[in-house]
Image (cartoon, rainbow, N blue to C red):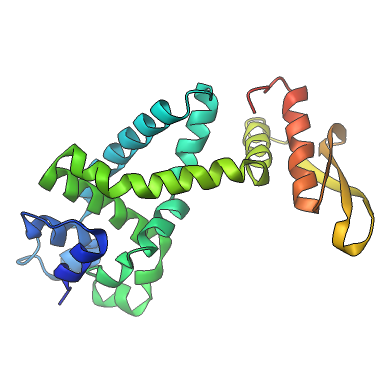
Length: 232
């Protein structure tokens, strides 16, 4: 049996209605095998949790990142609520260990599958929201969002520009973004890399950095500026 008491200790929230918590942990495979025990899978709760998470995240970013334009806020929110981030948040309190899974999913290692665990995180958030209201939901999820937002801000150069440029290029079928290492100068412990960014055969940007990855990001940033995407 799932240890609901331990999970509540892990998340520092005590449910008034533990049935809500149990429902949030129930994967569809478990619900199908225990129809008399569970009112359904956690998918409906996941649906609600997605909206609750989006609202709390948007409100937090709006209040605490007043210097950022709408486009940048949207990018940060997308990073915070993506599957990878939610899976990382859930691992901090070992959510996967408490999931209710059917026999097949159990055997296939689904307790560590990001898609299933991240969906359960949203379902858990919805359960807390229904059990204790919006303030309880905020108290639970905001520490994760705050840490995540800080990490995104500190490392924004390490992923944002390349990802954004790729998304823009993909809007036009046949357009291909690629990067070419031009030079790597200096001693091994302090090299400087230069990278060119191309759209098909057209040079869009040049970047330098202390690593090839950083140089690619700077090249992508210059390319975005050339394309008129100055908010990045």
